[in-house]
Length: 125
Image (cartoon, rainbow, N blue to C red; front, side, top):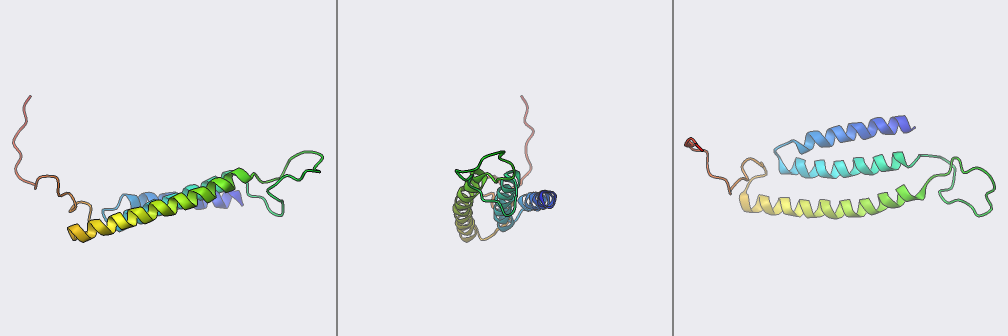
């Protein structure tokens, strides 16, 4: 099971990296959200995926602690989901405001602070 989850995490990381390299701001925002989900799934996979075993250790357990899931990665993932949703919402609103004010979602056309492409003079030092 962990093998398939590792392959899935790799595919999601690859897809998010591809989307982050795009010029469209909407793809960039979706790439950030996909990257957050890939990291959450990675943490979940590293924290051991076990079935039919409670995540909390019983008080009367006598013996070896094998096969019991760790609750810490699950708590980290829940926190990361909330933080990731907040960041995704903020970036989405920021992208919408940029689209409203500039009229485009292409990151190359959003460079309003840079001078227009003109013939540059040679810089000598």
